[in-house]
Figure 1 (cartoon, rainbow, N blue to C red):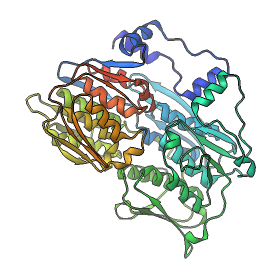
Figure 2: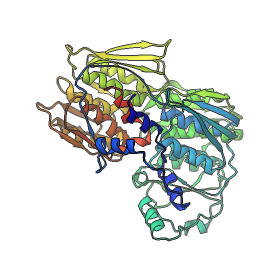
Figure 3: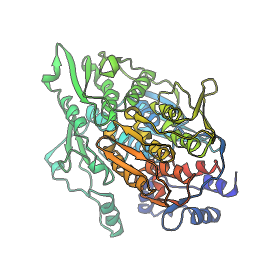
Figure 4: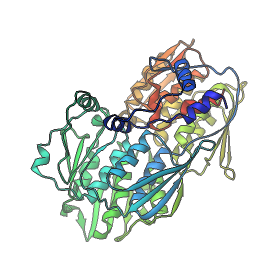
Length: 528
C-alpha cells in the first residue's frame, strides 16, 4: 500500500455535518490535514471539489473486501435499540447515513459505542445497549440529512412509542427549515429556536424535505401516531408527539388490520414491520401490501433480520401480507455480523465487466439476504463469467477481452440501487440496453432516471428516457465528461467506473460518497 493511501486511512475526520457543526459551536478546531493527504487531495481531487478518474489501461486482477451493508447496518442498529440489553454488531458500516442513525438513537438516550475498527480488514464493531424500544428522552430535534432509512425507520418507531405531547404551542413553533439557514444563523450569531417540551422533530437536507412520506404517515396515524407536517407538503420536516388511540375502523374481530403502499418505497413497509412489535401487546396485527411491492428483497432482508432478533412474523405469498401474534417482542441475539455491502460491490463487479479481467469480492455469498447480489446475473447475461464460493464467501466476476459485452433488456425493480451501475456498463456494450420498471427511483436522493440519462448523454450515448426506465445506446466515439452527482452517492460511484476505461471523466462533488461508502475512492485505487 502506498504512503499516501496509509495517510488517507489514518486521517482523522468528522464524518457528519452534525459533528462538524457541533465542533464549531463548542469552539473546537477541526483536525488538520496531514501534508501527504493534502498533496494527494490537491492532485487527485482538485481544489474545485472535483475528482479526475485515471483510466487503468490493463486487465484487472484484484481481491477486494468491502465494508458492511448500509441497509443491514441501519436496520441492525434500530432492532438492537428495540431489544433489552447489549447487542454487538460486527462489520458495521461507518458512513454518513449510519452515523446519522447512530446520532439519532443517542439523542433518544440509547447508548451506541463504536470500537474495534481494523484498517486491514475494514471490520468495525458497534455495541448497542437497547432499552426495549423505550426512550428516556422525550424531547429531541433529530437531524436526518438525506438518509431515507433513518427518517422512515425512526418516524415509525417514534410514532408508535411516542412519549411526547402534541400541543398548540408546537403548531406555533418557529423553525429554520434548511441546513443553509441554520448555518447562516450560527455564522451571524443568532440563537436557534428551542424545541418545545415533549415532542420530536425530524428534519434534514433540502432534498429530504422534498421526498414524500405521506403514505407511511397515513398508516401510522391509523395506529395512533400523532404526526404533523411542518410544511403541509407530505414530506419532512415532521413533528411527532404522544401516541393516541387506534382508529377503531382498523380493528376486525379483535385483529388490528392495516395496509401499506408498496409502490413508492419498500422502506415504508419495512419501517411499519419493525415498529409493530413495540405495540404488539395490544393484539394480533395484520399488514397488507397495497399495489406492487418495489425492491422486494429489502423487505425480505427486514423480515429475516427481525427473526434473528426474536420476532416470528408470518409472511403471506410473495410478501403480500404479514401477521404478528399478540405479545411478539424483540430479544437480542447478543452478537450479529453484517454482510459486506452488495450495492457497493456492484461497482467493482462492473469494473471487471468494463475493463476486463477478474475481481474477487470477499465477505459476500450467493445466498446473501441482499437482493443486489443479483446484479451479477445481469453481468452474466452481458457476457461475464460469475462464480460463487459459498464456503469462503467469495464472488468472482471476470471477462475475457476477446468476449465483448452485449446489451440486455432487464427488469431491475428488485435491484434498483444498481440501475445506475448497469447504465454505465451499458456504455461499453454492443447494442441498446433497456432498464425497466424502476419508476420509484425518481424519489431517491435525486430523480435517478433523469440524472442517469443526462450524464450518459455527455459521453455521446443516445438515451431514451421513459417513465419507468431508460434505453441506452453506446456512443460511436466517447467524449470527455464532467459528471454532475446531484448529491447522490450512487451517481459518483457508478460514473467513476466509466473513468477506469475511458479518459476525460471528472466527478463533481465526489464527497457525496460519504453517505454510504466513505473510502470508495481509496478502494478503487487498489485496482490500479
